[in-house]
Image 1 (cartoon, rainbow over the protein chains, first blue to last red):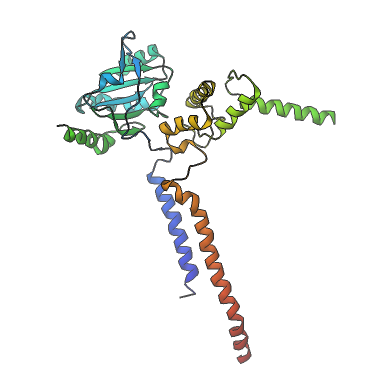
Image 2 (cartoon, rainbow over the protein chains, first blue to last red; image 1 turned 90 degrees about the horizontal axis):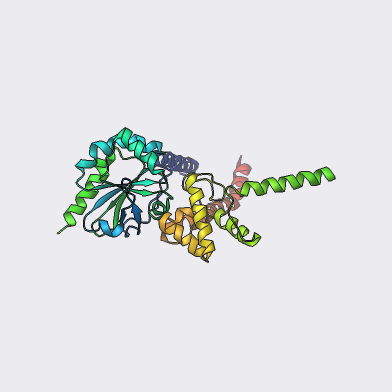
Length: 180
Length: 141
């Protein structure tokens, strides 16, 4: 038994390192869990992209769930995500609000004219403050906000059909069940 | 000697320039030192191995400005840290706070030291006993 002890120790270390490799491969190391899940969405009042004189505030969106997608015309991954939004936005059953984050509105309009507009409403956060309040650190990011204005789900990075099917749709369905 | 002094002077100036990625209107040196100190304790979320003071990421610039504005409005370092933690998690702090989720992080190393000490103690105790047996067996041989 004593002779085996070093081998057992070695095997344990190998197992630990193998677990480490496995963990790193199956997790996005840049992913930071948001402390805002199940907390009220931050206050904001932002102008509309296509009608800059009008604004949308957090209060205006209370009463039914909505989806916030933070994007920017400068954001390469947003371009990857864009066709997915075009295909799925109308099938999700909740309004999709785009937040044009740290972007020039005119460039954003050109970007949308070129690739299409999947959003029901687009608000502009030109200086990026509202995005920071939401804890955005890498566009695209997507937030599901419920009828009470509470953030229920967040996805960092581009939405894919797989993530929509596995995470976003079930999260939306859970909101539907809660509604009276 | 003069040359060395010159090189040192250039290095100091160069170092200083490296700190000031985006010039902020500090009212005095103390405020600037406080700002540098604070942003050194905060992690940039875009390039996660850099602190907020060093990062050239766009978001880091915005967050530096935010930190600066909060300092101007008289917020304490703790309040500013809390502002960032409430949005970006404890992860923004290079020094993780102690709570249930970070006990392993804080005490794990000590646990390993204790385990190691236990193993060492056992080995040494066994060794202390063994020489007698070895000596005996050598005699037999």
